[in-house]
Image 1 (tube, rainbow, N blue to C red):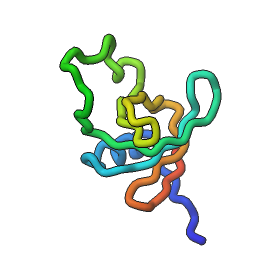
Image 2 (cartoon, rainbow, N blue to C red; image 1 turned 60 degrees about the vertical axis):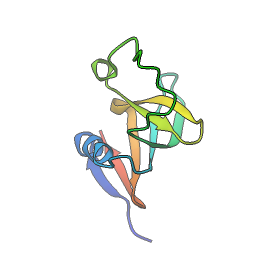
Image 3 (tube, one colour; image 1 turned 135 degrees about the vertical axis):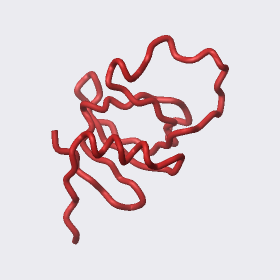
Image 4 (cartoon, rainbow, N blue to C red; image 1 turned 120 degrees about the vertical axis):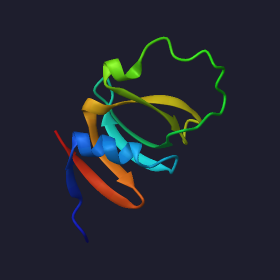
Amino acid sequence: MARTKRITLEHAESLIKSTRGAIFGVEFIKADGSRRAMTCRLGVRKGLTGKGQAFDPSEHDLLTVFSMGDNGYRNIRLNALRRVTVAGQAFAVVL
């Protein structure tokens, strides 16, 4: 079994943004301390009203994604990211 490659938080964020709409997986710690695993993607326009969010997610170290399991938009806490899976390759995020 191959070892999971360890990457920095900056590399993980770059890796996620490079998916360009492809499905990827993340695991992070939610604000309440619980662990969350999510299959998601960027660039989804489904259900958008044009109103936008009430705040800028980047100011709070968040990344808005479309959750495939919940069929809705969710925010990932980038500073609490633990694992990223892109194109079948898993990466552990070193904080």
